[in-house]
Image 1: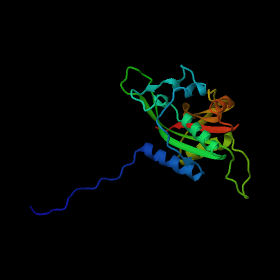
Image 2: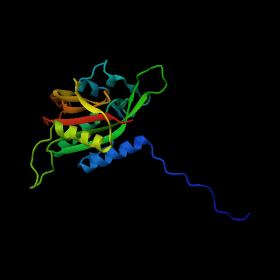
Image 3: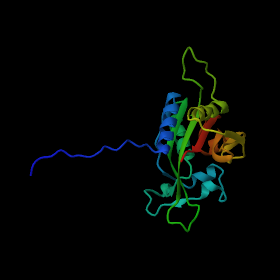
Length: 219
């Protein structure tokens, strides 16, 4: 049989729109000095009461795992915020005072028990505790605030040319009532941004008084 090189057309590279959004957020947040973390996609359901979440909240639409690795990891996460809070607590216990982290990952909701599979969403979230800038002679040592976190989202939406986004004041269980807002796209809520409630910080054994977070759905 004579040798013959394989033939055929090489297809054009195709990138899903969701991945473009992920890459854009990752590039922006890393450029702003945040570090990416990757947490487990499951967590302890006992974390939800610490966040002030009750049985009627969408965050409580849990997907239970039949064969969990441990009893503390028996449900798929409905939010990435507990993992980020654990990251902050771990860093503080190791004397890291200025913490800026983000995560891009999946969350799961069992909104319709009659369906065989849960609803899966991709979210991007970030947490910020400590100073606005890294310590240095040329930088002021002001603490980060709500507008720093909100500014990260505004910068991302502007660069990605996202139309008609707004921030709407809302009562969110785990956020401070005076510093919490819904993130809306064309009047549809897609996430939250704000300061973690002091009661939540105490329940999570985080001694920082001000910790800011956002979480938005991107797919």
